[in-house]
Image (tube, rainbow, N blue to C red; front, side, top):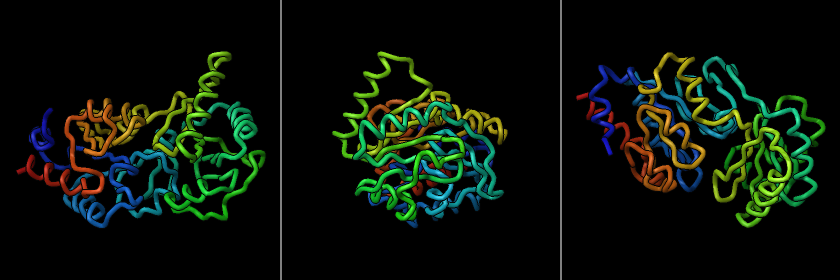
Length: 283
């Protein structure tokens, strides 16, 4: 396993790399907060001339709520869109298939107690109110009063949908879908567990790795010049695509297997460690 400082020694300046980071489980600690120390380290990286972006399952509002400094377009919806925070402009989207509403409707009937949540390019719509929906609004910084919309009222393209629930409920829904798609074709929906209590759905043509390649094209940074930080299975394609992959010590074991560098636990202000390693390489 190489070191980040060794990787940076091949660069002429800090602006020769684009640093892209996941939020939840990486920059965000177990209290669902990005610490002031992590934010300050990101700002110092930017002030030194660095280019910083995020790659997250969050949408515009729930990522802006964190007040994390960025100075490059960022990947949202787990790879379903790219958004420019400075210009307030959606640059690229990968909508789910048109038939996805039929699938969501079926899941609402099969699991009516679960808090299915739909994400369009600009907003998230909560279709059911329960304690898990309130948990999701709390970690996303959203208004709980937004809960209770109707699926039929959603007119914008659906980029992803999720359900926050107890792990055993998620496993039940996952087993239902696994069985369903052995009997009929999958309409183009990718589903995975991003947190033990969060089941996420995107288009099969949408993932963080594919979005990272699009971000590379947009920004002019070659993939080999992108540093990616992530902690979970939904980060795998991005970790494998980037020139240098960083995973927290608290990250998923499979993610750590593909890491070039394992940094501190997510509760230990990992951006400070990453910035220190970058500085060493530029000395």
